[in-house]
View 1 (cartoon, rainbow, N blue to C red):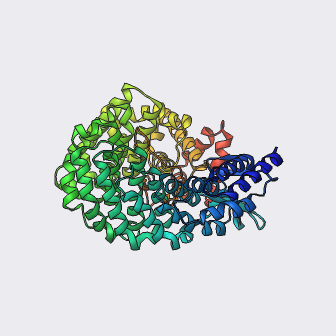
View 2: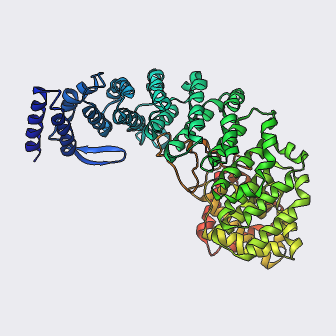
View 3: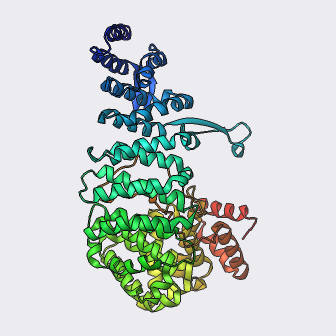
Length: 585
C-alpha cells in the first residue's frame, strides 16, 4: 500500500511542477496523502511512530521546506497551510536545530492576509514550544550507574529569545486588526511565547502589557470567544508572575496599566471576566513589596468585595476567596483597624452554609487563623467553632470531615492542644475526646491527608500526642492517645510525606483552556498556605518530643508497647522514625 501511495504522490507532485499556478491542488493532495501513510501512532502531543518505509525528512526538505521558504503570501495559501500542518504534525521527529530553522519561516507567515495561514502558523509555533524530548541523566543519589529519565521542553527559554521581537510583532499585528475576529490560536501562541520567554520578557513588558490591555478593552464590550478571553488573561497572569515575582517594585506599573480595564470590567459587571480580574488582583496584591500595605485602590475595593450579592455567583467564589486571602496576607492589620474582621467572618459563614462553597470557607478561615493575631480572634473563636460543630452535626460528609479536621490540626498546631480541648469541652464535657475518637482519627484512617495537609496534620497530631497529658489520665483517654499515635506514625511514614514549603513548579507546557464552571488561571496559581513555614522537620520534632515525653513519664513507654502490640507494622515504623533521628524510647 505504501508503495502504491508513494507512486501516486510522485505523480501528483510532477503534475504540480508542470503548472504551479493551476495545479496547486495536486501538491495539496500529495501532502495530505503523505500525512496519511506516514503516521503509525500519535496523540495530541504529536506523532510517536512513523512508517519506516517513508523517507519523511527527504519529503520535508524537498516539498515542505521549499513551500515555507516562499515569502509571497498571495501564492498557494492553501498549500502553505498544509505545509505548516505537516511541520507541526511531525514536530516530535524534528531536532532542536530543525525547529530553530523553521521558526523564522513560521513567523514570516504570521503576516499572511490569509486567516488560515496565519492561524496555522500561530498554532504551529505554540505546538513547537510545548514539544518535549526524553532526557536521560545520571542520578548519583540512586547509585553510580543509575539513570533517571524525564521529559524536557525541546525548544524554549534561551532558544526562543532571538525570535521574540519579530514573533510578538507578527502576533499582535493580527490581534490589533479589527477586521478579523478574535483568534484564539494567536492568543494561545502569545500566552505560550510569554511562558517560554519568562524573565527575558522584562524589557518589553510595558509594550506587551499595553497591547494586551488594549485587547481587553475591546473584548470587554462584547465577550464572544471564551477560549480567546481565557488565553488573554493567562497572558496577563504570566507577565505579572514573570516580572513581579523577581522585581516587586514593578507591581505599581502593572497596577497603573491594569486597574483601568479591570475597573471597566467590574463596573460593567462582565460576569465572564470578573473571576479572571479577581485572580489577577490577588496575584498583584501578593507580589506587592513588603511593608507597603494595601494602598488606596485595594482599601477602597475591600468593602464592596464583602457584599453577599457578589458571592452569590458561584463562579466568583474561588477567585474572591483567593483575593481575600491576599488581603489578609498583605493587610491584616489594616483590616483589623477598620473593624472589618466581623464582615469578613460573615463571608466565611455564608460559604460554610453550602456544600458547593465549603472549600472556600475553610480556605478563608485558614488564612484568618494564620494572619489575624490570636488576641483579636479570641472574642470570635467560640462563635466560629460553634458554626463548625453545627455544620458537622448537620451532616458528616467525607469532604466536610476532611476540611474540618484539617482546620482542627492547623488550630492545634498554632495554638496548642490545650486551647483546642478547652474550646471543644466548653460546648459539652469531653467533646474533644468524642471528636478525636469518632471524627478526626477515623477520618485519617479512611481518608489519608495529601500534599500540604500531611504537614499540618503531622504538626497538629504531634501536639495532641506529646503535649496533652490529660489524655493519659484514664483508659478512654489512653485509647484515644494510642489511636492518635498510630495515625501520626502512619502519616510520618507515608511515601507521600513532604514537609518542605512547596516550590512553584508549574508545567509550562500543560494544556490550558476555558472551564465554564470556574476558569482557574494556570499561571496565576498560588502555593497552598503553609501555616508552619518555620517547621522544616516535623519528623524530628515528633521524635524528640516523644523521647522527652517517655523520659519524664515512664508509663508512656509501656502504653506504646501495649497499644502497638497488635499492630507490629506501626511499631516497626515508629522504631524506624526514632532510629533515623538517632533517638530511642
